[in-house]
Length: 230
Image (tube, rainbow, N blue to C red; front, side, top):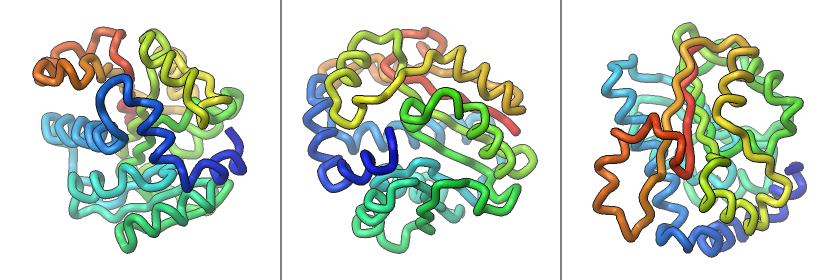
């Protein structure tokens, strides 16, 4: 998806997203929150050092920002996106919560600027030929021992495939198998890459979600995420 397409959908993104995912019985807020909560749990479990600077890469209209701020209160937040209109919506929704950077190029940031780079369902919108290059740029922005967390849709999951196929702003999306994403991260220089699957139970089975961490190795969840170390 190109910048102009992101701009086109920015003002109606929440409504379109909510309509698109109603089949699972949850709204956009749930999906934005659970990703960050998942990372917070992992961060605490592994006793990673608390980050002082976080980038939300491809932050869009800012869905993840309040949750990142709550989960990592001591960190400064930078919201980066190529869509000026999306960032304008994010600023209206969450003023003063982050530094908002509209740019086409990550080279505007100094090297080793961030401890954590978080990105949620962005790479399936990026030309696959640019994945390794983009990962290399993100790698250069991480401080020593920094971590990149990438959430993506799982193309093996049939519900996910249906939702993506019927989503207006996913028209040009190309889903990425988890092993292929890991391979591209390794080619960019990342090491110790872990993959965990999430999103096994819809709202009707929410009572079973406590068990999801025990299923994280099962490649059937609606989404997955990688934790890649610099």
